[in-house]
Length: 586
Ligand code: ADP
Ligand code: MG
Image 1: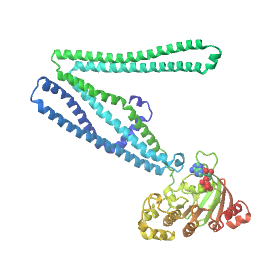
Image 2 (image 1 turned 90 degrees about the horizontal axis):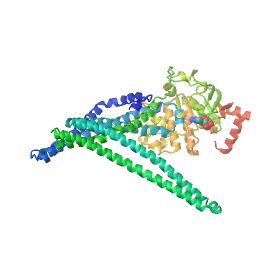
Image 3 (image 1 turned 45 degrees about the vertical axis):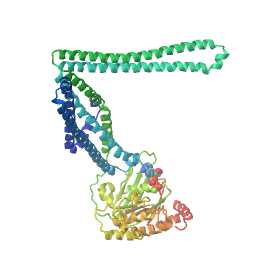
């Protein structure tokens, strides 16, 4: 504990942990009472040694022959209950703290900015959620239990010893620690000498190995006698070292034994004095010795409690550091019921954290409300990055994105995001019913509207064939559904959300022709009357777009309608020829 004081933040961590323990204070109190009973029972049992020896054996008193065993039985029954209560109380407290922390952390994870997930993989964050919290609670409840139970045990045992004999106790308390100190010094010193000796032995054998590896030289120069003499010296040296090692070991263990005997002699002498004056009986002496024996493991645990405690505190510090990380910036104050859907990018550049090159460079364009803007270009050109700026998953490094003439940062984050529906290549589905997946994030959605949305998304065709229709659970991440079916659920979700801004990021890229046709039909019903940014590879989508943006290496290299860009015969025309060759049905 003392060494902890100079660590900055440690005290702060304790205080914060206490905050988490607070809801469980009554449970912890009950556990503490249990521990007190445990320690008292141990103390009482130890004191029972006295009548056990003095009455049962020395005086052969018939009265205690039955009562004493009964008392012991009762005592252990009580102690059992106390142990059960304290263990259960501490376990429940630990589990409760783990659960509370996990909920707080999960809430935090949902508020961390997207870029935070680039710096640490989800698996790592999850292991903090599951592993670190459990570790922390286990270490801390363990430490608490040791601190309370063992402190109490030591105090109780000391009390009993003092009650039996002041002198003997004082002798024990002076001699005991002194012996512990001396023997730990001796064994430390022994270990150090031992290490030195082992190094010397290793050097010796190294030297002899050298002379054998050089045996050809030894023979050519006729140096056998010389080498033998050298080896004799070396092995004599190593013999001497080994003996020194053995001597040290022997001396060390003899010394420790001697010290033990010395202590025992002193204790016995003091006890003998007390016995001579009638102050101590045989039973009293047994009580003192037993108390000492019971106390030793407690003392040992108390001195080692630093380890688990420190582990727990370190875990807690890591978790608290995570909890203290900044949330997604949400400083906007403007509320927004329903946007008209005018989007403007003004000289936007984006550089991802830890990257040297910007992923988007100085891009400017405007999308009028209700129009379709197709974004095309080679992979890695920055298309997805552009789209991610609208829901503010990432922030531009320079420039600004505006919605209805106001910078995105001016709006409240939740209001802004309510204006946007997204369908990407990967569709997130949750382990719930089809209906719940379509109405995801909606607090109220009647089944009629869900059905309409599914219908418009071409999804009823397969939902009808599911065993419980809309109420079928679709399994973990929708594992029962095909790619096209998942897309259509995502589209139904977007239709139900009915947001003025729609982002489609390669929504049909991973589909076969048949699913693509169904999905495309659904998209065609979703797109009208919304400002749509569609990152597309499919020709028909692009042909009908109000404007086409061609991205290359983060730059907006061309902008215009399909026809205009074809006529220009530049980057778009080249891309179009490639596309047409690869995908003639497009
Ligand atoms: P596109 O969608 O056109 O294929 P992206 O916008 O996904 O292109 O990527 C543009 C560039 O930014 C690429 O070089 C890509 O490696 C990089 N990039 C994309 N996402 C991240 C990220 N989260 N962290 C760092 N770099 C990224
Ligand atoms: Mg992309």
